[in-house]
Image (cartoon, rainbow, N blue to C red; front, side):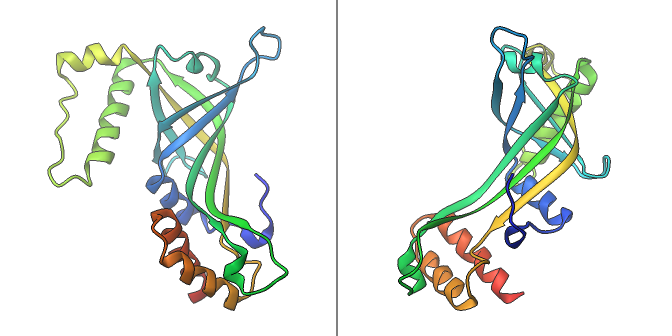
Amino acid sequence: MYIPATFQGPDQTAVFDFIESHSFGILVSGKDAELKDAGLCATHLPLLLRRDVGPHGQLVGHMARANPHWRDMGGREVLVVFPGPHTYISPSWYDDSEVVPTWNYLAVHATGRCEIIDDEPTTRQVVADYVEFYEQSQPQPWQFDANADYVSKLLKQIVAFRIDITRLEAKWKLSQNHSAERRANVAQQLATSSDPEAREIGRLMRETLER
């Protein structure tokens, strides 16, 4: 990912926080160049972050066994894209004639080697970890019976995997290449938007101004 120094993201702890709050990622991997259908595959899916595994953490997930993507991932380097909030920035908000439109956004790229998990106990634990993570914010968390008969049947329909992250890239493009006055004007405009993502970008811009 192209990241000018001005838009370099925060430290790893903050990047981990971002991944956990925007955990529905896009997993991308390639196929052998010799194959007739060689190319890229992409799957949209939620991923769990294990912060304490390796120097850059580990991602764990699962996908439908019917999805052929998993057959080409094992032992390969893969890329996971975690998109964040984004919004259009109008030149009219800068109060200057020599400006052009742009787009502000946050994004994280995680690169690592993928390992397919082919044993049922570990796959069962991955599913249990999913449920625990996503249910924790519910007023009355659903209780998952990992040993139920129907769970054993469903486990046969999915394939779990882990990705040891070797590189994290984070881009926080929040108009840092403009003056504080311009950024304040943009943040004020975004604060009144009907788009929640625009308002979130405005909030983040105000945070950078306060540092």
